[in-house]
Image 1 (cartoon, rainbow, N blue to C red):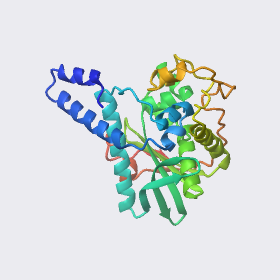
Image 2 (cartoon, helix red, strand yellow):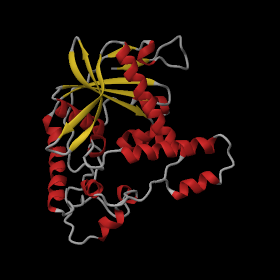
Image 3 (tube, rainbow, N blue to C red):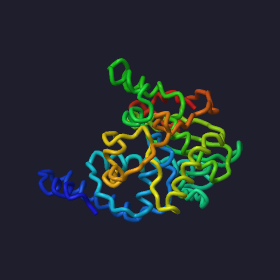
Length: 305
């Protein structure tokens, strides 16, 4: 169901190009949302540093959700991310190293369901592929410490991109969860910088200690569903926090009594510690298919692998 505010905005828009495209994207997004599985826990959701298991519980229980508002900019961001994924999946297929794309991921015990971007199979063996389109907003949300110098105008966009030396924690957790479900010990995380189309590739090894806290939280949601009692709300959440502000179940959640907050350390990640990961340190010159800088087709940029 489209948000009435979005429809009102479009109806009042004077733009002959933007308004009809925005309406089209809203309708397409609404159609996709209506088909999205709501009975399981999804890796892209549960691996975020600010995941709230209580919100997932309400969703699976089928509580009514308020229609979410989407701007044209936000919808455009979604579309660009999809195009970047599809491009790399096609290239890797044509290069002969993609064994399978959009790989179903399922773990019945922990109620996990999703799709990995792919499985790579080359002379080094099989590896789970995770593709991420990265922009300024990604850095701000995933690692504010890296973003802060840019916010203070101390570094430019190129320097912000150069400062990314390792995959972000939530992306590591997501790849690790796929590796767990698919029983594959190698992972490859591919970043494309949306500002310049530069790319970075990171290799990681499976670490069970990164997955175990996620699986434990999944089981807590499963037990809550079986007992029909909402799981404890993370202690770092407040009614004014960003997570709660945009949660469709905020009113229901904060109206309940007797909640015992969890994760007493106040860590938004629920206390998940990211151990050192095996990240490939090599630097190679990019070929065209690896992310040639579109601003200067004669000189490929250097890409951290």
